Length: 158
Image 1: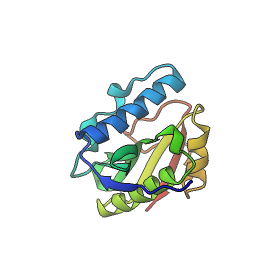
Image 2: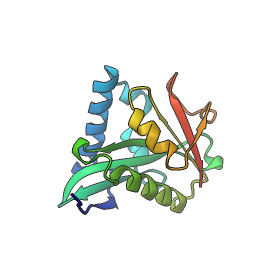
Image 3: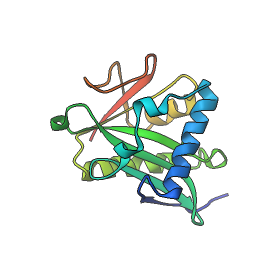
Image 4: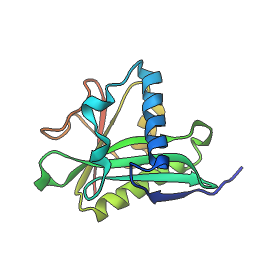
């Protein structure tokens, strides 16, 4: 069964973007037994001019999203992909891959030279997506950028 979806930049403060963002946090909480989201990410970091949030919609309804925030020394132009999430019934149908391609293009437009991301043991489908999307595993994040102990870390040169 095919379906059409659109993806657009939306302010993280919009109801659609916040609904996707909170759905992602809810899923992380269920998978890992808790979340310390507010300690390591502020939604303000996903606001322009250096941050962005993309929302995918089907028939006007939010079904997925992803953001980028700046990390590390500003002169290095490094970004971190945050809160990729797709509605469970639409997974493995191209929405996540499209969101990743779109966020990479958007990051280039914003002047980022490299992107980083991390995921964990309870998200094997995310690891698979990143491995098949040209992301390179790395041991560490840039200096001054938080990364969870034991996380799977990836980088992409833009």
